[in-house]
Image 1 (tube, rainbow, N blue to C red):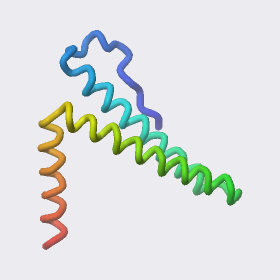
Image 2 (image 1 turned 60 degrees about the horizontal axis):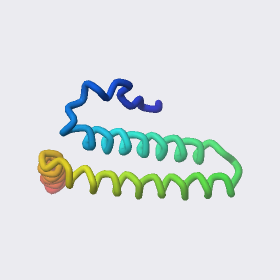
Image 3 (image 1 turned 90 degrees about the vertical axis):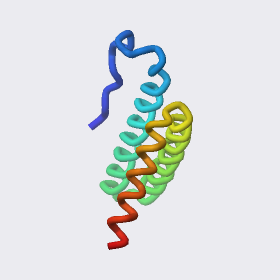
Image 4 (image 1 turned 180 degrees about the horizontal axis):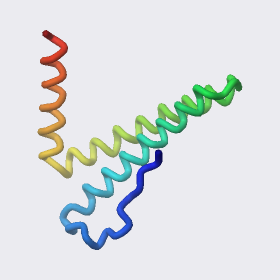
Amino acid sequence: MLSQIPINLENIDPKDLDKEILRAAIIAELDATSLYEQMASMTKNALLKKVLLDIAREEKTHVGEFQALLLKEDSEQEKELAEGKAEVEEMTEK
């Protein structure tokens, strides 16, 4: 379930290092979100469920923060994200 960050960062081109760090951070936050939401769905304890879901929402905010930084670092990512969104909007209009 939990993703692994590349062990050997020496093989990453230094100009791409920050982008890879941001992608790894996004993966970690998405993994955490998924874990907390799954645990919340399993517990019978209402307070624990409430706290887990609150933390999951915070992780989603972190995804947004890292994604905003990634889009500043990687113009291709920004372009492709916009294209993907447009494709989905086109499909839902049909």
